[in-house]
Image (cartoon, rainbow, N blue to C red):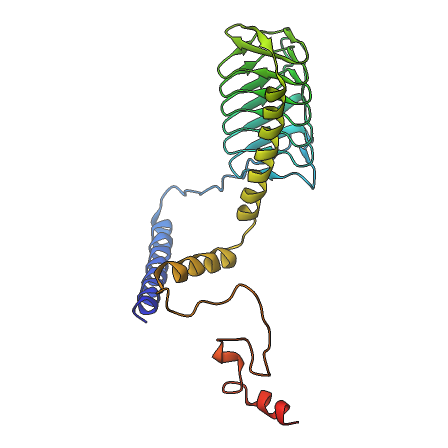
Length: 277
């Protein structure tokens, strides 16, 4: 009861404060000599360039609200672009295949002035946090470590790994099945079966996590409020207090759902009449 009363008080005070603020804002605006216009900053999650907008698969797993997907970008099914990442195709094309993930703050770009290179990222590719793929090609089943750079005209073959922090120089070709490291990057070894498994596992793990984030981002205000109330109920109620059953048992012997007095003959007398019939 105390918690409910406190909520009502806070809600009432906040509403009154908001109304007062709006009134003061209107009064201030009427007194201005030089009018000030507030401008809404548009979302930059999906931005068209020269009339060309990103094409995102309906089955894409997740594009973070703070990510920027700009211009002639194609994103395949089950792929994800994470928080703060930028995929920018303003002058050339960026293609990202299926089940690939672009990590937090990563940058995917193209080249137009110095050479004419698009960017192509294949299937089951992991681009680590803060990495840069600039006008390059990553074939299928590739892992690019955090903060690594793959630069203009470079190609990374299938089942290959670029170690974190490495720089793949412009025009470099990494053959299939090799691990490269360093600045400039050079071959370290051939990838093992365990390495190939790690590449696949990384892509699959990112997909599972992306689905969870997408579900949370899709919730509206009412659902978030219900989630918060359920958390508070579980957090603060005694273990001895009745907890709603996750399994929906439905009506039992005409008395409604077990433990829910609001759905029985005390609150719905018509249910008792039905039983007599």
